[in-house]
Image (cartoon, rainbow, N blue to C red; front, side):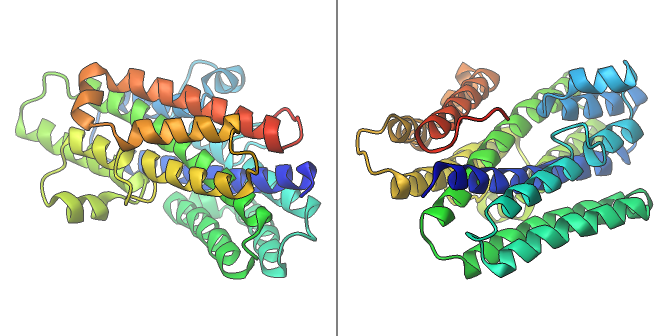
Length: 320
Protein backbone atom coordinates (compact mmCIF):
# COMPACT_ATOMS: atom_id res chain seq x y z
CA UNK A 1 0.00 0.00 0.00
CA UNK A 2 1.20 3.53 -0.78
CA UNK A 3 2.24 5.45 2.33
CA UNK A 4 0.06 8.37 1.20
CA UNK A 5 -3.02 6.12 1.18
CA UNK A 6 -2.16 4.65 4.59
CA UNK A 7 -1.72 8.17 5.96
CA UNK A 8 -5.19 9.29 4.83
CA UNK A 9 -6.84 6.15 6.18
CA UNK A 10 -5.04 6.44 9.52
CA UNK A 11 -6.07 10.07 10.00
CA UNK A 12 -9.59 9.59 8.72
CA UNK A 13 -10.26 7.14 11.53
CA UNK A 14 -8.41 9.26 14.11
CA UNK A 15 -10.48 12.34 13.31
CA UNK A 16 -13.73 10.36 13.41
CA UNK A 17 -12.80 8.93 16.80
CA UNK A 18 -11.70 12.35 18.05
CA UNK A 19 -15.06 13.88 17.12
CA UNK A 20 -16.82 11.15 19.11
CA UNK A 21 -14.52 11.58 22.11
CA UNK A 22 -15.03 15.34 22.10
CA UNK A 23 -18.79 14.83 22.00
CA UNK A 24 -18.57 12.40 24.92
CA UNK A 25 -16.57 14.81 27.07
CA UNK A 26 -18.78 17.79 26.25
CA UNK A 27 -21.91 15.78 26.95
CA UNK A 28 -20.78 14.63 30.38
CA UNK A 29 -19.61 18.14 31.30
CA UNK A 30 -22.91 19.59 30.11
CA UNK A 31 -24.91 17.08 32.15
CA UNK A 32 -22.85 17.59 35.34
CA UNK A 33 -23.02 21.37 34.93
CA UNK A 34 -26.79 21.06 35.46
CA UNK A 35 -26.22 19.61 38.95
CA UNK A 36 -26.34 21.94 41.98
CA UNK A 37 -22.82 23.36 42.36
CA UNK A 38 -20.96 26.60 42.88
CA UNK A 39 -19.86 28.78 39.98
CA UNK A 40 -16.21 28.10 40.84
CA UNK A 41 -16.68 24.31 40.68
CA UNK A 42 -18.57 24.58 37.39
CA UNK A 43 -15.78 26.70 35.92
CA UNK A 44 -13.18 24.14 37.02
CA UNK A 45 -15.10 21.48 35.12
CA UNK A 46 -15.00 23.44 31.86
CA UNK A 47 -11.38 24.40 32.47
CA UNK A 48 -10.55 20.71 32.93
CA UNK A 49 -12.20 19.94 29.61
CA UNK A 50 -9.91 22.41 27.86
CA UNK A 51 -6.93 20.88 29.68
CA UNK A 52 -7.81 17.37 28.46
CA UNK A 53 -7.66 18.56 24.86
CA UNK A 54 -4.71 20.92 25.43
CA UNK A 55 -6.80 23.87 24.24
CA UNK A 56 -6.42 26.34 27.12
CA UNK A 57 -4.01 28.59 25.19
CA UNK A 58 -5.97 28.86 21.90
CA UNK A 59 -9.18 29.32 23.92
CA UNK A 60 -7.62 32.14 25.94
CA UNK A 61 -6.46 33.85 22.73
CA UNK A 62 -10.05 34.01 21.50
CA UNK A 63 -12.08 34.41 24.71
CA UNK A 64 -9.63 35.73 27.30
CA UNK A 65 -9.62 34.50 30.89
CA UNK A 66 -13.38 33.98 31.12
CA UNK A 67 -14.21 30.27 31.02
CA UNK A 68 -17.91 29.42 30.83
CA UNK A 69 -20.17 26.75 29.41
CA UNK A 70 -21.42 28.70 26.39
CA UNK A 71 -17.99 29.75 25.11
CA UNK A 72 -16.29 26.39 25.72
CA UNK A 73 -19.05 24.48 23.96
CA UNK A 74 -19.07 26.90 21.04
CA UNK A 75 -15.26 26.68 20.77
CA UNK A 76 -15.22 22.86 20.86
CA UNK A 77 -18.24 22.26 18.62
CA UNK A 78 -18.47 24.84 15.83
CA UNK A 79 -15.15 26.76 15.74
CA UNK A 80 -13.50 25.78 12.44
CA UNK A 81 -10.22 27.43 13.50
CA UNK A 82 -9.99 24.94 16.38
CA UNK A 83 -8.55 21.79 14.79
CA UNK A 84 -9.98 19.65 17.63
CA UNK A 85 -13.55 20.96 17.41
CA UNK A 86 -16.27 18.55 16.29
CA UNK A 87 -16.88 20.40 13.03
CA UNK A 88 -13.14 20.47 12.20
CA UNK A 89 -12.71 16.76 13.00
CA UNK A 90 -15.65 15.73 10.84
CA UNK A 91 -14.45 17.96 8.01
CA UNK A 92 -10.92 16.54 8.20
CA UNK A 93 -12.25 12.98 8.34
CA UNK A 94 -14.31 13.64 5.22
CA UNK A 95 -11.39 15.24 3.36
CA UNK A 96 -9.11 12.30 4.17
CA UNK A 97 -11.84 9.91 3.03
CA UNK A 98 -12.27 11.84 -0.23
CA UNK A 99 -8.53 11.59 -0.91
CA UNK A 100 -8.72 7.78 -0.84
CA UNK A 101 -12.23 7.42 -2.24
CA UNK A 102 -11.16 4.48 -4.42
CA UNK A 103 -9.91 2.51 -1.41
CA UNK A 104 -13.14 2.83 0.57
CA UNK A 105 -16.42 1.07 -0.09
CA UNK A 106 -19.34 3.15 -1.35
CA UNK A 107 -21.10 2.80 1.99
CA UNK A 108 -18.06 4.08 3.89
CA UNK A 109 -17.68 7.16 1.72
CA UNK A 110 -21.41 7.96 1.84
CA UNK A 111 -21.36 7.67 5.65
CA UNK A 112 -18.45 10.10 6.01
CA UNK A 113 -19.85 12.52 3.44
CA UNK A 114 -23.37 12.51 4.83
CA UNK A 115 -22.12 13.01 8.38
CA UNK A 116 -20.27 16.18 7.41
CA UNK A 117 -23.12 17.60 5.33
CA UNK A 118 -25.64 16.83 8.06
CA UNK A 119 -23.58 18.42 10.86
CA UNK A 120 -23.28 21.61 8.79
CA UNK A 121 -27.07 21.69 8.38
CA UNK A 122 -27.70 21.01 12.08
CA UNK A 123 -25.37 23.78 13.24
CA UNK A 124 -26.84 26.29 10.79
CA UNK A 125 -30.41 25.49 11.86
CA UNK A 126 -29.61 25.78 15.57
CA UNK A 127 -30.16 22.13 16.50
CA UNK A 128 -27.10 22.21 18.76
CA UNK A 129 -28.35 25.21 20.78
CA UNK A 130 -31.85 23.78 21.13
CA UNK A 131 -30.73 20.40 22.48
CA UNK A 132 -26.98 19.93 23.10
CA UNK A 133 -27.45 16.45 24.57
CA UNK A 134 -29.28 15.19 21.50
CA UNK A 135 -26.63 16.70 19.24
CA UNK A 136 -23.82 14.93 21.11
CA UNK A 137 -25.70 11.62 20.91
CA UNK A 138 -26.00 12.13 17.15
CA UNK A 139 -22.22 12.66 16.82
CA UNK A 140 -21.56 9.47 18.80
CA UNK A 141 -24.07 7.55 16.71
CA UNK A 142 -22.44 8.65 13.45
CA UNK A 143 -19.05 7.49 14.75
CA UNK A 144 -20.55 4.12 15.71
CA UNK A 145 -22.12 3.93 12.26
CA UNK A 146 -18.78 4.66 10.58
CA UNK A 147 -17.05 1.84 12.46
CA UNK A 148 -19.92 -0.55 11.84
CA UNK A 149 -19.97 0.15 8.09
CA UNK A 150 -16.20 -0.35 7.98
CA UNK A 151 -16.42 -3.71 9.76
CA UNK A 152 -19.35 -4.80 7.63
CA UNK A 153 -18.20 -3.78 4.17
CA UNK A 154 -14.42 -3.31 3.92
CA UNK A 155 -12.05 -6.11 2.94
CA UNK A 156 -9.83 -6.82 5.94
CA UNK A 157 -6.58 -5.99 4.20
CA UNK A 158 -3.95 -3.35 4.99
CA UNK A 159 -6.45 -0.51 4.53
CA UNK A 160 -8.66 -2.02 7.22
CA UNK A 161 -5.75 -2.40 9.64
CA UNK A 162 -4.57 1.20 9.23
CA UNK A 163 -8.12 2.41 9.91
CA UNK A 164 -8.26 0.35 13.09
CA UNK A 165 -4.80 1.53 14.15
CA UNK A 166 -5.90 5.15 13.97
CA UNK A 167 -9.12 4.49 15.88
CA UNK A 168 -7.56 2.72 18.84
CA UNK A 169 -4.47 4.90 19.12
CA UNK A 170 -6.74 7.96 19.31
CA UNK A 171 -9.03 6.24 21.81
CA UNK A 172 -6.14 5.26 24.09
CA UNK A 173 -4.85 8.82 24.10
CA UNK A 174 -8.27 10.25 24.91
CA UNK A 175 -9.12 7.76 27.67
CA UNK A 176 -5.78 8.43 29.40
CA UNK A 177 -6.36 12.20 29.27
CA UNK A 178 -9.90 11.85 30.56
CA UNK A 179 -8.93 9.64 33.51
CA UNK A 180 -5.98 11.87 34.42
CA UNK A 181 -7.82 15.21 34.42
CA UNK A 182 -11.13 13.99 35.83
CA UNK A 183 -9.56 12.03 38.70
CA UNK A 184 -7.56 15.07 39.72
CA UNK A 185 -10.60 17.35 39.50
CA UNK A 186 -13.01 15.11 41.42
CA UNK A 187 -10.48 14.28 44.13
CA UNK A 188 -9.68 17.98 44.54
CA UNK A 189 -13.37 18.86 44.79
CA UNK A 190 -14.01 16.11 47.35
CA UNK A 191 -10.98 16.79 49.56
CA UNK A 192 -12.22 16.80 53.10
CA UNK A 193 -15.69 15.65 52.06
CA UNK A 194 -17.62 13.50 54.41
CA UNK A 195 -21.24 14.60 54.52
CA UNK A 196 -24.07 12.76 52.78
CA UNK A 197 -24.39 15.57 50.22
CA UNK A 198 -20.65 15.37 49.46
CA UNK A 199 -20.87 11.61 48.98
CA UNK A 200 -23.88 12.06 46.70
CA UNK A 201 -21.92 14.68 44.73
CA UNK A 202 -19.01 12.25 44.36
CA UNK A 203 -21.33 9.48 43.18
CA UNK A 204 -22.80 11.61 40.40
CA UNK A 205 -19.39 12.79 39.22
CA UNK A 206 -17.77 9.34 39.23
CA UNK A 207 -20.87 8.03 37.46
CA UNK A 208 -20.54 10.83 34.90
CA UNK A 209 -16.93 9.84 34.20
CA UNK A 210 -18.03 6.26 33.60
CA UNK A 211 -20.90 7.35 31.36
CA UNK A 212 -18.55 9.50 29.29
CA UNK A 213 -16.89 6.29 28.09
CA UNK A 214 -20.07 4.16 28.10
CA UNK A 215 -18.81 2.24 31.13
CA UNK A 216 -21.42 2.82 33.84
CA UNK A 217 -23.43 -0.30 33.07
CA UNK A 218 -20.22 -2.27 32.56
CA UNK A 219 -19.01 -1.16 36.00
CA UNK A 220 -22.25 -2.36 37.62
CA UNK A 221 -21.99 -5.71 35.86
CA UNK A 222 -18.32 -6.27 36.74
CA UNK A 223 -18.15 -4.98 40.32
CA UNK A 224 -21.77 -5.04 41.57
CA UNK A 225 -20.89 -2.39 44.14
CA UNK A 226 -20.97 1.34 44.76
CA UNK A 227 -18.78 3.44 42.49
CA UNK A 228 -15.27 3.57 43.97
CA UNK A 229 -12.39 5.62 42.47
CA UNK A 230 -9.85 2.79 42.49
CA UNK A 231 -12.25 0.48 40.68
CA UNK A 232 -13.09 3.16 38.11
CA UNK A 233 -9.36 3.50 37.46
CA UNK A 234 -8.92 -0.27 37.18
CA UNK A 235 -11.83 -0.58 34.75
CA UNK A 236 -10.63 2.22 32.48
CA UNK A 237 -6.97 1.27 32.54
CA UNK A 238 -6.44 -2.45 33.08
CA UNK A 239 -9.60 -4.34 32.07
CA UNK A 240 -8.97 -6.01 28.69
CA UNK A 241 -12.70 -6.73 28.29
CA UNK A 242 -13.70 -3.04 28.65
CA UNK A 243 -13.79 -1.71 25.05
CA UNK A 244 -12.45 1.77 25.82
CA UNK A 245 -9.83 0.84 28.44
CA UNK A 246 -6.16 1.50 27.83
CA UNK A 247 -5.30 -2.20 27.75
CA UNK A 248 -8.11 -3.02 25.30
CA UNK A 249 -6.95 -0.21 23.01
CA UNK A 250 -3.33 -1.40 23.11
CA UNK A 251 -4.43 -4.98 22.38
CA UNK A 252 -6.14 -3.71 19.22
CA UNK A 253 -3.19 -1.52 18.26
CA UNK A 254 -0.80 -4.43 18.69
CA UNK A 255 -2.89 -6.93 16.69
CA UNK A 256 -3.44 -4.54 13.77
CA UNK A 257 0.16 -3.38 13.81
CA UNK A 258 1.33 -6.97 13.57
CA UNK A 259 -0.76 -7.41 10.42
CA UNK A 260 0.96 -4.56 8.54
CA UNK A 261 4.51 -5.06 9.86
CA UNK A 262 6.71 -7.35 7.79
CA UNK A 263 9.85 -6.77 9.87
CA UNK A 264 9.80 -8.79 13.10
CA UNK A 265 12.46 -6.48 14.57
CA UNK A 266 10.33 -3.38 13.91
CA UNK A 267 10.92 -0.64 16.50
CA UNK A 268 7.25 0.34 16.25
CA UNK A 269 6.13 -3.21 17.05
CA UNK A 270 8.59 -3.40 19.94
CA UNK A 271 7.33 -0.13 21.48
CA UNK A 272 3.69 -1.23 21.16
CA UNK A 273 4.41 -4.66 22.63
CA UNK A 274 6.34 -3.23 25.58
CA UNK A 275 3.58 -0.73 26.36
CA UNK A 276 0.92 -3.43 26.18
CA UNK A 277 2.94 -5.74 28.41
CA UNK A 278 3.34 -3.01 31.03
CA UNK A 279 -0.45 -2.59 31.11
CA UNK A 280 -1.20 -6.30 30.97
CA UNK A 281 0.88 -7.14 34.04
CA UNK A 282 0.22 -3.98 36.04
CA UNK A 283 -1.91 -3.85 39.20
CA UNK A 284 -4.09 -0.92 40.13
CA UNK A 285 -2.86 -0.79 43.74
CA UNK A 286 0.73 -0.45 42.50
CA UNK A 287 -0.26 2.27 40.03
CA UNK A 288 -2.11 4.25 42.71
CA UNK A 289 0.74 3.81 45.18
CA UNK A 290 3.30 5.26 42.78
CA UNK A 291 0.94 7.97 41.51
CA UNK A 292 -1.84 7.82 38.94
CA UNK A 293 -0.93 11.14 37.35
CA UNK A 294 2.71 10.12 36.83
CA UNK A 295 1.63 6.78 35.35
CA UNK A 296 -0.81 8.38 32.89
CA UNK A 297 1.60 11.15 31.93
CA UNK A 298 4.20 8.53 31.06
CA UNK A 299 1.58 6.52 29.17
CA UNK A 300 0.62 9.55 27.06
CA UNK A 301 4.28 10.22 26.26
CA UNK A 302 4.69 6.61 25.13
CA UNK A 303 1.51 6.69 23.03
CA UNK A 304 2.76 9.85 21.32
CA UNK A 305 6.10 8.14 20.70
CA UNK A 306 4.26 5.14 19.25
CA UNK A 307 2.29 7.43 16.95
CA UNK A 308 5.53 9.07 15.80
CA UNK A 309 7.03 5.63 15.11
CA UNK A 310 3.99 4.62 13.06
CA UNK A 311 4.32 7.83 11.09
CA UNK A 312 8.01 7.27 10.39
CA UNK A 313 7.69 3.60 9.47
CA UNK A 314 4.46 3.55 7.50
CA UNK A 315 3.07 7.00 6.74
CA UNK A 316 4.08 10.10 4.90
CA UNK A 317 5.98 12.68 6.96
CA UNK A 318 3.29 15.20 7.78
CA UNK A 319 2.61 17.85 10.38
CA UNK A 320 -0.71 17.46 12.14
